[in-house]
Image (cartoon, rainbow, N blue to C red; front, side, top):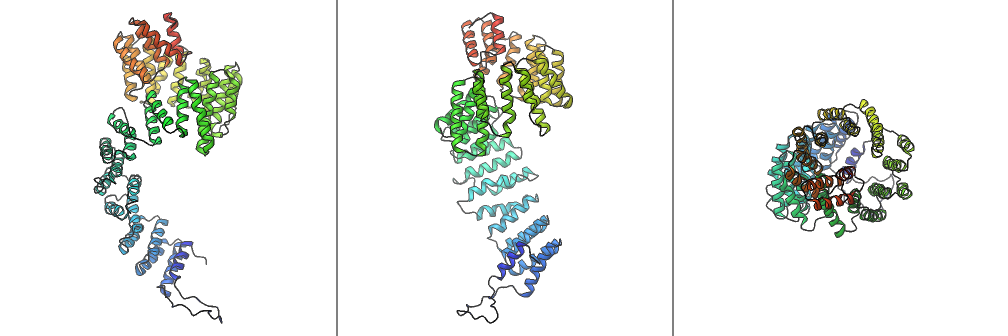
Length: 578
């Protein structure tokens, strides 16, 4: 009968020092070395064999007991390890803990035995008992490895049930390392992450501060502060910016830029990204993000240059991740060519995309090119011909077709297509919202409001719905106090959003509060230079008699996007040619 691999290894290890057996009649060429007998007598060999056979025949408890008894008799670490493994295989946490503790008792300085005890206690949610093994793990680690051990602590406690209790245990274990210059930053970062997991945001911020004080150049406290960044917690960004004043890793500066993008602080985000491309021109990802943002802002020439730089770097560096980045770059470059009406070049960029995951995006862009050339039926057929491997694929195809129709001002067709989708998914807030926006385009304001109210019921924190209804009421100069309440509600869910601030300013303007409207619009336009915000800011300035300033803002808006519907309607209504 063949023994399991682990059993065979154990038995071979114990037999390694047995005297060699010679074939009958064979004489050794040299005198035999002094025989070193192992401790494996017949009884122990039988016990080990029986233990492994029992385990193999699903009598794991019996097998575990026999192996653990053998480990205790021989004080052999391999047998203790095997006993722990057998308990794991049987999914018996208490037995695994018993074997690991016996192993640690037999070998008090064994880091491996102690680590097993620690991991099993954490897995069993016996968090208070993990304090001493955690202290031992830190003490037994080599000085050069200790920071790595500290960094992994929050991950090791990630699945425990009582996060607050875990945070207290970790803080106690690390108390001796928070005042040490070599380990202070890592220790406070680990404590901060444990506090954050326990819901103690203020405590996490305090730990990040202490960690940065211990070592201003350390990445850990800055990364923790980056995760804590929120308009309601401005001190976190102060810590991030302190780290940025030094020589930060480009990855961390990119992380800061993403946080700024999430907060809709686009100019600041672009500034951070451009610092990366200036200081580390070989850092490919920064060029991709910079190019994408510039194209979105209609800065086509510099955006195209940044994207081409990314393509050059990515093609040299390779990797699957770069393939996805290249697909994104080709899509953006195609968009640049499309805006220039160079449809052949736009298709040429799309032809370079060979990743199946980007097929929908590529075909959607091709459909847009066809639509702009008056081939809407072909464009819609192209999207509908895409394969559907899941309900998510079908939904994405619907949204792509809706986007195509909306961009080409076929609002009724888009509304009807969304209606079919909503009938299948009546509680999908995105579909309901998009249909409401098409209802507004069709001037069916009653239906628009009904759909937006449905969104608010389905997803109460869907800030776009509050903003859209509030702005629509302000635009029609009706129910203005309610419009203000709706927009302010949207800002509670998305504080600092420049587009929602634009809506609030428009409400204030409609209510006659010109100074307040001007203040809000100037701040919003600074955060996000956008043609629609420019349209409103210019109109407020115009109404206040600041005609030159208004025309200057409108010219900027036209440079950003000369085809913006709101801006052009404003200029036409006011009979202005800036």
